[in-house]
Length: 217
Image 1 (cartoon, rainbow, N blue to C red):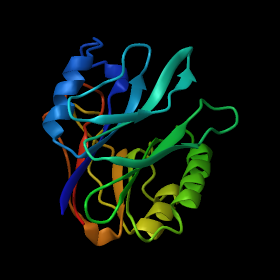
Image 2 (image 1 turned 135 degrees about the vertical axis):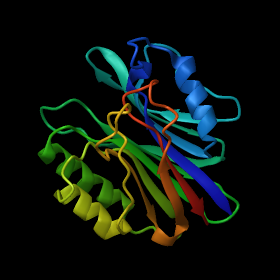
Image 3 (image 1 turned 90 degrees about the horizontal axis):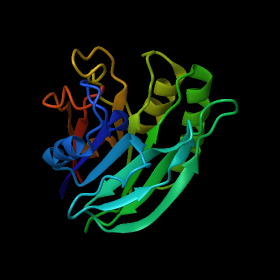
Image 4 (image 1 turned 45 degrees about the vertical axis):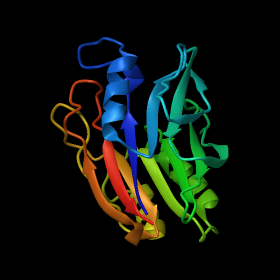
């Protein structure tokens, strides 16, 4: 079975022109043609992004008085869903969304997140995620999102590579002239990941490029 997953930091739906345009982001998401899509920096002060044929899961947090956070869209049946708290003392609240999806083959567990800006914060959050990842060898697990990790030799990336195998990296930020690989996908077992790429056609809709991963279960 072949599937596609994607991750996209939508920057509050605000593009390089400074305009908030949900439909513009929706067009990009539709073009990704993914079976499961993790969105970061979604603002929930308006109706959340919805697409025909896709189910949605989100647990907003409060940021600067606005509901804000992650969203997972999928066209696969959802077997279970939960929220993993990643909030770090003194920093803005964060979480990860976990959904287990029915594929017709092995279950697909998707963990979508957006990590913090400070190194100590990210180390704590990666440890929390790894605590939840351990022990399930029946599912194909996909961890994806905006990891905000600027340091290629930093502990968070090394810990994730140790658990999932070395994940591929492509530059996604800033979208116009990408220099940094902030948006990533890890897959376990590693051999389920067939191809990974950025989506360069979306250079103006957000400050990040989307990333795509093709899987074979």
